[in-house]
Length: 108
Image (cartoon, rainbow, N blue to C red; front, side):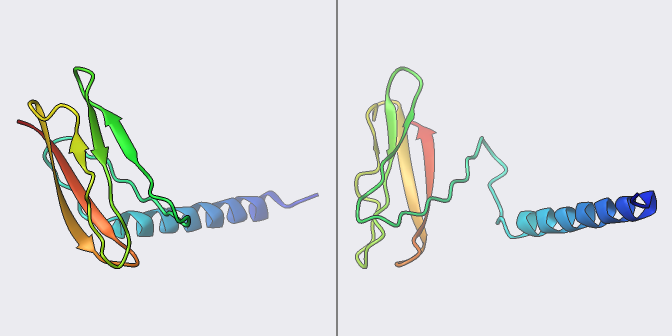
C-alpha cells in the first residue's frame, strides 16, 4: 500500500511544477494593449501554401488578415470587405523566416 504522505508530496511537486511552467509562459507572452479587446494568435505554417485568416464583422462584412513569410515578406491582401465601416492597420515586428505581424481593426 502506498504511503499517503508520498502521494501528497508527489501531487504537491507536480502542482508546483505546473504553476512554475504556467507562470513562465505568462511572463514570456509579451505585453498586450490594455484598450479594446485583443486576440493573440500564433500560427505555424510548414506548408508551401498561404493561410488565410478571416473574421466576420458586424453587418455581414469580413476582416481578412494575411501575412506572407517569404524573404520579401508583406501583409498584402489584408483588407476588409466593408471599407466604409472598418479599417485594418498592420505592423511587422519580426522578419523572415519567423515573421511577426500585429493587426488593428478599427471602425472608420
